[in-house]
Length: 398
Image (cartoon, rainbow, N blue to C red; front, side):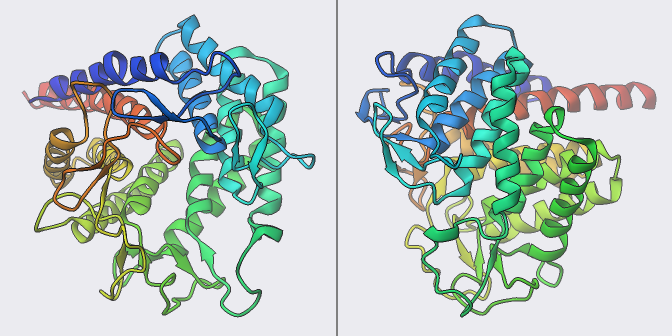
């Protein structure tokens, strides 16, 4: 297939398969918000509502409205989730719970700062769609709360004994690299720039280890290596996803050296994380080759593969490195042969090491309307850019 055919495939899967699946099966028309625990056929198998996934779905339909087409049904879908979250999602201090019952009663305390991250994303994107100041205020209040909590994100809910083995985790600075661009229209310019600089430095200078070419999931507070389960942990998908965030920031600032570095790290992580026996990308690995503590270490997950494809396409777009295109074709072929379910819609989330569906659910506690539609959109648009760029270069060469 050529660039144009690949772009059409990603566009069609997004608009004619994945989005309709969630539009049809996800809305809770009685209590608001969304059902995310959907089986292979879209039937609801659990009604608990997880703040991450509620917020991500608000973001997704707001983004589609803002960047694809001004469809009222998409905006209504986003607003349905936002109004439920506005009413039930936060505690008295403005922290976002982890999960709620179907009707909105809190189930799990606001121990997880990523609930707040996705809430800021959601309401920031919905503010762009509607111009409603109320949504903008929720987004900015939440973002400032994240910055206040970032050095001790779990606070009183942390299970770790203080001081014995303090570690910092990669996930929050990684997400902030993306969140700050999502929030740019609502934030002071100096805050945006300082957050970008801090995020890029943390990801590329602290968690990235130059000697191995890999990104660690945890380091000590000063960035040193911790020879422990947590300190040895590699999550290839996290690092691969982060690299397209970094490429977007570098593109914004016209930093070609940073784009090149992010592309090289993408290739390093993929070479390291690829299962050479069965194909696909491992979920967790130990940097010293010891057995990981995560029993699901060898599973193949939907989000890891779609996020990898985005980074490979962006790396190819910006650098022309043919290794990115070769890897894209390899990861694309693996992914499209196994994750999408053409008979019933959407993608499987969890495969065993051999690449067979481990669970046939389309949504649950962790998988919702986010990585697949966002990834399909990013790939579609990036492939269109690739087609336009390389058609121009081909014409100029003639």
